[in-house]
Length: 285
Image 1 (cartoon, rainbow, N blue to C red):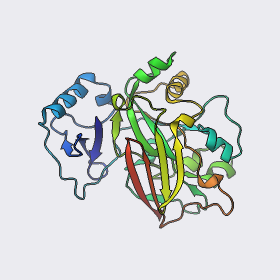
Image 2 (cartoon, rainbow, N blue to C red):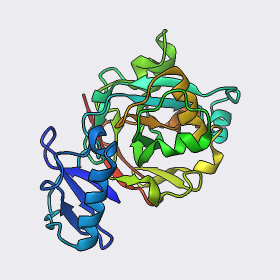
Image 3 (cartoon, rainbow, N blue to C red):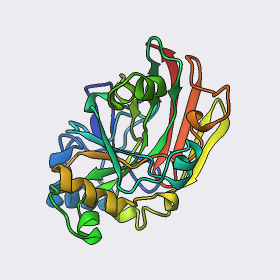
Image 4 (cartoon, helix red, strand yellow):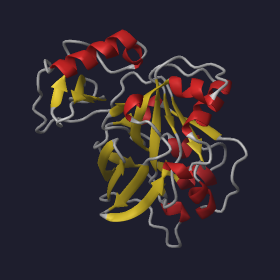
């Protein structure tokens, strides 16, 4: 299934995109697409049954904002330097273990919402990423099979980053990763049954129509199952939590001088095979 949330910020309603591309209203069945729903197999089965029976009312998508496909996100866990190509382009050694950091949940916005370039920023960068959405509480998972069984689905994430704040201002990466609007997410949560191999997905990103990133999840240093298993050793993952799994080569930081960092007025578009497409216009904060 392709689950999504539509409507104004803070007032999104649950919806489903059917196989014909028609937007369907889920409001009569569920209150929201969130962790409590994703952990409820019977509720998900009711949605599947209603979709199969063709009884869900259609929604007019004209002018309708698409919000983040998961509401009430607890935390956003991120994996840094998780593609061989990206590590190479930035001149960094391949990590021996996953590099883990956190983004605040309030950085998450809709897939086509405005991204704000922070005041004083000169190094705002792009990163297309595969996002994992957790569906079952995960603690100390031991096998890859266990890890994948705890995944509700997948989505597109844009891990926007300010490199000066991240790298040159001291401390950890937090200052360059948690600026407002720095995690566009969606358009859909595609349930795990529709993604049989998360290591077989192409990722692409364009800036002002120019292709910048053209990668593939097969280049991940730590694949999806290993990431979920690893993170579960250090923190409890709850239904509705998100893991951004890293970005392929092609970021501004990895390009020759003068590096083409983002500015107000730029347009970024990104997509992952089968998971949908995002488009953001950048403005000054």
